[in-house]
Amino acid sequence: MINKNYFLLWSGKIISEIGDKFYAIAMAWWILMKTNSPAAMGAFMAASMLPQLIIGIFSGPLIDRWNRRSILVVSDLLRGLLIFGVFLLSRFEILEIWHVIASAAAVSMATAFFDPSVQAVIPEIVEAEKLPKANALNQLVEGICMVIGPILGAAAVSFLGYASVFLINGISYLAAAIFEALMTVNPTNRTSAEGNLWMEIKDGFRFVMSQKRVAVIIATIGIAHFFIGGVTVAIPFLAKGLAGDGVRNLGNLEMAMGIGLLLGSLYFSIKSKSRLKDQYLFWIMTGVGSCLFGIGMVQLLRVNAVIPYMGILLFLGVAIVNASVFWQSLLQTNTPNQIAGRIFSVSSLVGNVSLPIAYGLFGMILNYQPLWVLMITSGIALAAISTVFRIFYENLGEKKLKMEFE
Image (cartoon, rainbow, N blue to C red):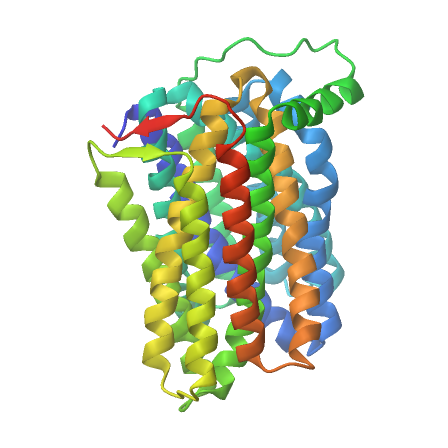
């Protein structure tokens, strides 16, 4: 592990995210059994996302004003207490759908402060040359949780029941807060607490627009989230059309992508003495487009076995990890730490807005076009956009950044 402080951050994150996976499985089934209503499920998903989008605009300047370790601790404490409240309501059999939606909205508000703070605090506890490795280890958490979280979560619901799983998630947040409280953070100069909040928000956007490389990186984040969101919509339809049991196919496909995330993260977390140029980000996005194109071509050839698609999704998971490590490291390196909260809030906002747009648009398109058309078109479009962005980025005439793994 990179150092003690990063180990504490990483340990808390993996504990809370595994708890989140447990909670997501349990809550999805609870809503289904309680209401059997797609509208209720949609309301829960909206409540889990919309507050984070709205508050994310204002959280950046506050993250730059306040102690980021304290933000992490308080955010996890609040999330833990909220989920503990859901546990108590469930334990006494008085939990209602409005309780679930309200708690989801409140958790989303806390997450609007937590997620950008994690990215902003990493440069305060990790040396600049070790940022790519730190971000790779951060992505390793995503891979581990994506592979084992749903499996263990489903088993926990079956053997322990809903209330116990809710309690596990609440405890996981409180445990993460303890780890974060033990960190030692050396903050750089921050914005004055007496500053004008609206002006600070504008300063963040002004910095992005004035630093064209940063603007291109953030635009790439939005494009990537859009097309990966399209894959998320398409995978259940893909699983349903393949030979064998549709639910099992879905689990295998998602597991394959999770394994790709895990392997890619593990590779980068142990890699040493490798130089990474910033334009590689755009080559990786071209690789993501190639994976989408591959899914479409295999569909066009009417291959109904799940194994070929699992192989493509495994490579897609590796490519997603590569892209994520690059963009996080590039933003951290190209952004003054005193405004990092605002910049990562902007990048989170762009990514999070792209996802619901993709969900709606790709869902509608699948009503009228076969999956292979959508995947082939998406793959070609993403590869073309990535190439244009790369050429534009390389012609900006600014000093190229090189990162190195130790």
